[in-house]
Image (cartoon, rainbow, N blue to C red; front, side, top):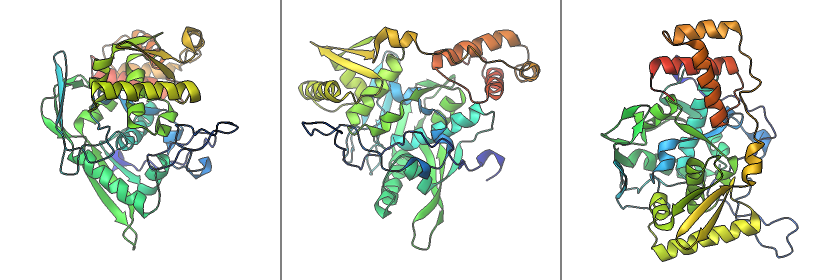
Length: 378
């Protein structure tokens, strides 16, 4: 596979990490709840010491473009309808294959790949569009079923990701894309057991997704995202994370929210589904990071904890000290740039993104390298 396609199969050292879960588990009952109501969250399937891959040591990442636009279907049944979403002068058209559109739960595989690539970038390692992964690790990392059924579902997921085609003029990585492409270019099983069960899978990401990773057009996701059982809950969290972030609040009209979610429900049914999620969150506090409120035809999103909690968030850039060698190498990677100006931009950027680099020097040099390659990078 060469240097650029090293297997991303480092053993996770953090045994206290909260595991992810998939879409084929049953909800667990609340402990000590006299009403015996079940939590809307999906339960943890695998024990922490069973995890492989450093995605649990790194922050979970999703690309901004897919969070902004309704790329993925909310249906758990084959969705064969062509979608078109317009927002100002930007548009996205999503076309299914005979297997149907890629779903919100299929997106887990992309999140896994994106998280691995971003972690590699933060460590100063070279990355490639082509990843070779152990299928079992991928299933465990997303807390999917590891029986034969789980492997079959993984095959179907890869088929939908490759078969779903997108036509768009959305810009990623400073480039405007007008051609038609798939979410992944290809997926190939590179090794199987005697019983025919896949052991390794090779995934080649589309240019659209990979350029977003290279330009760091990604956002950190709460790990509990993978415990959300309802497709609409996942989509609402993505939009809250994208549009509210760490602001005190974000407001959006109910109909516009329905369109941004990609919901095929009527306005009346969408209101009912949204209100049900809001009511569940009031009882169980299960939605990660953000609360939603519906009044008339307006939806308000607020970070949980309010402005007081936001003011207490630590600045990841405040205590970082770079060695002299970092400035020398940075000048070489971003020739012609003021290295101290770049350092100020880098510190401001990681503070806004909430990034805490494990290896600050390598992370800073990767920033310099990207600035040298993409002058308009922010």
